[in-house]
Length: 76
Image (cartoon, rainbow, N blue to C red; front, top):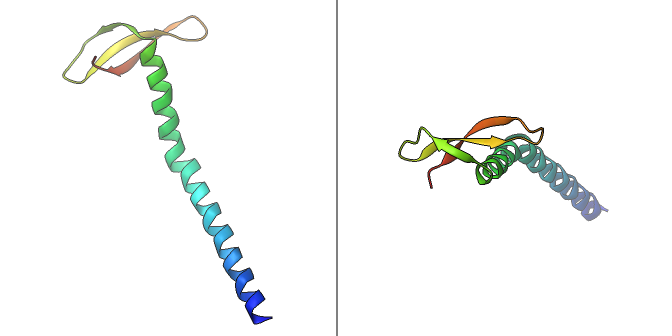
């Protein structure tokens, strides 16, 4: 019976650890990944890139609603 209790405790610890990793991922890591994906999508659709420095340019893209907006894209 002691072995079963120990296994239950280890299972509970594993579940809590997995949940903690999930919380850290969704609150800290996923937002930056999502922002990079969104910016990459906008940069792929960008035109009229101006104000370039060594690495970045300010470009214009068309949003889904038809309006234009600006985004910082890597210099190509």
